[in-house]
Length: 356
Image (cartoon, rainbow, N blue to C red; front, side, top):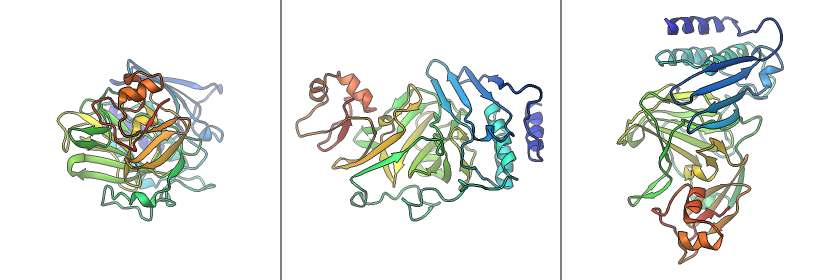
């Protein structure tokens, strides 16, 4: 019954139905609950007024593992999608156990934008064309040769145009980035239950949305700053290739497809095919980016990424976690946590690690 009413409500939104507030002009307070985050409170205004279209929504999520305040709403660049894409998005949420207010508000916003003139560049143009020659919808990754990358590159990962970071899912980290069992683990494993919602960390365009070998059901989103994020082992995919998404938008449901021994989200961040350690610039305990700007550097160890305000040390021959930690007044646990790893992962000569 709830889903039927929600579907009718969303259908009405496609024919100029809006979530308009009548009466005084005070913000509307809305509160919902979910299994992952105990309370989500969104303070929103009339989504159809001219000023609120470009005003971020303040959203607070609180539970035992999540405590964030982030802006996740309409931004100054118009987000343009087609009517067919909007209908597809509506259909894709109908088999969820619950539908959040944020999802309804997002769909209402998209609906209101359909008939608006495009005054600025739409985000449905191919992203990051300065970094990529093509938008390959068949191959997950073909890393470019490291010698073709600049020695140092600065990327903005959060601003009014790009939007803010949104946690893909709220859960405990069960495996970090780094060498594991003589193999490189190129992402972070985040615990979840089958069917838990998985969200886009940043806004962008879906490049891959299908089953792919060890990844299982995987979604890969290319972002406008050149980064790509990977969401693997999903039980269901809720987006399609070429679809524009904003940070916080539903991408799929958690599961254990592909090479997975249990339900979890395998989350990666890549630049031009090269895997970056997400824990170097994202706090998975505070659910926020450590800085709005990211520095990407080459080394003999590979491609590393750090917040622009971090101090970086290059590992020398004979170094150990203990020696480096002692040299900079840290414990080995602090040093490992700062770099999203622990002493099980071997240091390699030329590797760049954070020391503050």
